[in-house]
Amino acid sequence: MKTNKLKYLCILGAVTLGLSSCDDMFSPAIENNLGLDYMNQNASYAEGVLGNGYTRIPCGSFPFNEVATDDAVSNDNTNNWRKITSGTWAADNNPAERWRDCRSGIMYMNLFLSRVDQVRWAEDKVASKLYAARERGEAYALRAMFMYYLLQAHGGYDAKGTLLGVPIVTTPEDVNSQFNMPRETFAECMKAFYADCDSALALLPMRYSDISSVNEIPALYKQMGADVSTLNRVFGGKFNGRMDGTIVKAFRSKAALLAASPAYADQSGTDYKAAADYAAEVLDANGGLAGMDPTGWHWFSNTAEINGLKDGINPKEILWRGQKSSNNDWEKDNYPPSLQGKGRINPTQNFVDAFPMANGYAITDAKSGFDPAHPYAGRDPRLAAFVVLDSSKVGSGDKEIYTHVGGLYDGIDYEQGTSTRTGYYMRKLLRQDINLEPNVNTKQDHYTPRIRYTEIFLNYAEAANEAFGPEGKGGHGYSAYDIIKALHDRAGVGNDYLESIKGNKEAMRQLIRNERRIELSFEGFRFWDLRRWKAPINEPAMGIRKVINADGSATYNKVEVEKRNFADYMYYGPIPYTECLKFSELTQNKDWK
Image (cartoon, rainbow, N blue to C red; front, side, top):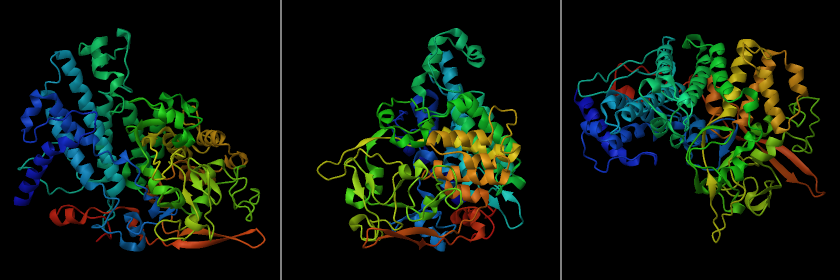
């Protein structure tokens, strides 16, 4: 087929041209016109092919897709996530699309895996074998990661009621390959995912670190002839940040929880017990409950910790992260306008209402002590840490921000495109020691956590509650109840409500989901969580109009800011329209056009 041959030529061109954009941990070849056989004698060139997987990591930055949920709106009319809430989400207009990059990533990994053992990785034969083993493991790990993100974004039911995943491709494609392939079932894709995880785990260390004794050499590497010096050369701490066994196990936890969730469970082949067990493997290796970082809920404001980070070293809260860099991008986008920001992400009243009182009771509970006339008093400490409320102090000068009606530049709806639409600004993720004034324009160190341990704790809590009940441990050292209590304790939230429901699976489920909503907010989770839970996705985004009365008192009125217009079939994302046009065997998810 002419189209397929052209596609393959474009792929081959991307292999070489793409090498120039690899992450700084790689050293790609200078020339752009080298053939694939050049990989065999040039390790840097081969590294560049593997590097094309790392440059496509979907969790490399925050998508801020909360704008398409009940947690936030954007004041930017051109925001793609904002656009789809109006009912314009389509197979040819999909900001959640991961098909192109993840399928390309798999293509690169297949190519790399077919040639990794032919590459001359080092002059020393033992070192060369060890490099081949490690990089093969990385490629399996990356391929598994891409499969997870493809299933999250594009898995769904066809018109016949079959839960489908994506085409499974494990070999390099050439001009003779069959590109017109059907989608495999979701369950078969999960099997392929687990197989790649197993292959990666057989080759990768749990963590990269330098050793000092032959007794620390794993049996596999010892069989290859490794000594201390060679092992440190290939598996030493300088490689932290690349795929390792702990990251693989974390993705296995994420994928298992996805598959066990209500949207997929009937045909995925994975249940909540498996999801709990996989999460526990990660947590147990980190000390279980004792491994929970007491400051992990405000990782973004631990400035001394962030400033002191060395390459490859993770804070206690972080399982995997991107590179640290000095910038003020998040602050420019999200500081209130009086601080020279654009105020882009506006948390909703829905999100604010999700925070309990400091005693742990929801604000709707009669036992909470919530006072509508003073709605922010006595609340969960995370609220003021994550959201700019009226009169919050923000920025390096602790400027008081007024979001009420008439609050000048920062007031609700003061100026379209810059001021808040909901009465709130986002505070989470932002450093408060940055000054954006043109004559100052300070920058500070930032990093993006790709996986936090808090996510894995919440993965376990959700799965364990469903599999073993709120206090069941399933053979592990802690229960869902134990996890939520520990999260509350570190944030300074009381546990009276938690104690009252610890025997109630349904109430615990809602509490766990709410904790996930709070703890992982603005990090790209809720859009997908609502869908895998089959939870309501059409809750209108609400705001608050605070009016200061003549006597100094305040009146708070909830207002609808933005509707959510998602049809039921939108619990599952579409296959790209152009792909379905090109390939007749590629079945679209039900009701997508």
